[in-house]
Each structure stands twice: as structure tokens, then as C-alpha cells.
Length: 90
Image (cartoon, rainbow, N blue to C red; front, side):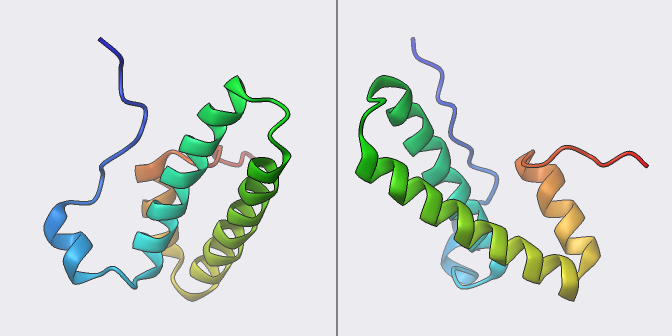
């Protein structure tokens, strides 16, 4: 049996209700990034997929930067739920 590495943190009701929210968009981009990453592990020379991955990474990075400026609490909660970034130690 193959383990599904893709996440379903957001319920179906939240998907229908808040499909335009920043959190949902970051969640969607994260799923796409994970799918493309697993695809690129098999097909290393698929340069168009690499380009698509870089574009999606940039979009997610800009959305996360926006969210961190507007609402730091929601940003930290989302990062924790999706397990995207390492916690910074100072």
C-alpha cells in the first residue's frame, strides 16, 4: 500500500467556503509543489515542470510574505499546520 504524502488539512466545507482566502491558496500551492516534487524525483530532466515548480514556489512565497505582514498569528498557525518552514532560532 502506498502512503499518500499529500495533505488534507482543510475540510471540504472550508474548501467551498473560503476558496479565495490566502490560507487556502497557500494550501493549494503546497499540494501542487509536493506533487511536482515527487514527479521531478522520477523525471529529473523535465525542465518545463521545473519551471512550473519555481513559479508556484514564487507565488506561495509572495502570499506567505503578504500574510506575515498582515496577520502574524494566522501566518504562524498556517506554517505550523502545513509544516513548511523551519522555526527560526535567534
